[in-house]
Amino acid sequence: MSGETPASAEELWSAVDSYIRDRLIPQDPVLDAALAASDASGLPPIATSAAQGKLLELLARAHGARRILELGTLGAYSTIWLARSLPPDGELITLEADPRNARVAESNIQAAGFGQIVQLRLGPALETLPKLAAEGTPFDLIFIDADKRNDESYLEWSLKLSRPGSVIIVDNVVGAGAIIDPNARNPWGEEGGVDGVRRFYDRLGAETRLDATVIQTVGEKGHDGFALAIVK
Image 1 (cartoon, rainbow, N blue to C red):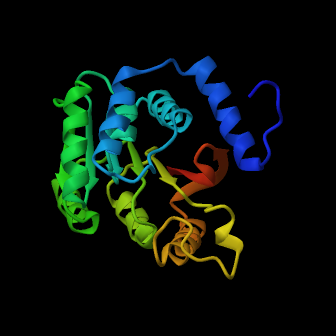
Image 2 (cartoon, one colour; image 1 turned 180 degrees about the horizontal axis):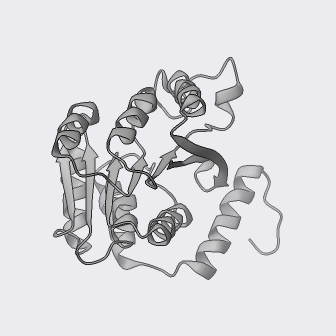
Image 3 (tube, rainbow, N blue to C red; image 1 turned 120 degrees about the horizontal axis):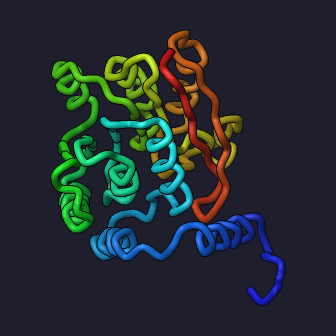
């Protein structure tokens, strides 16, 4: 940048992300290859940033998670970050509705060396989640990064799949302020997403079994946010 000031807030956020990544998150051939494979396969470039992925890994490690559930695999970029937090006998189940995404993700998971601890289940999450609940083993951490229309339902199922002390993290819950804009439409490229996230907030605020907050995020992915909740 040669000392020049970025011309916009978005450019500034991206420049700061680059500064953070250069100093704290070393170049990673495995993750770079996962992104490259996703791009080559035409997957949308909506994976978490490197700084956000590292945050997920650190949160899971700090929590001592041994069993993780992810809703929304895409190309498995965040999956790999989360899998790195697990002990050798840990387990991560990731849910993906799109067969093309799942094929890319499976390849990336294997290439990253996590084929033994990561299990990808293909199909709409609202069809897979009841089957997981029937298996009866709770998760220590649940990361929701799927379609926003169903965030409220995903939260409901997360409560059924958790235990006291479980952590629930939900991505994309700000949408550049769309949640407070009555005229906002489609900030995540998904019709009905804003209303879905607003329903999620209403449900989260009314849920007495959870302690929760939201952290706004800015960076190369724009202005959005993570919801973070702990099951009481």
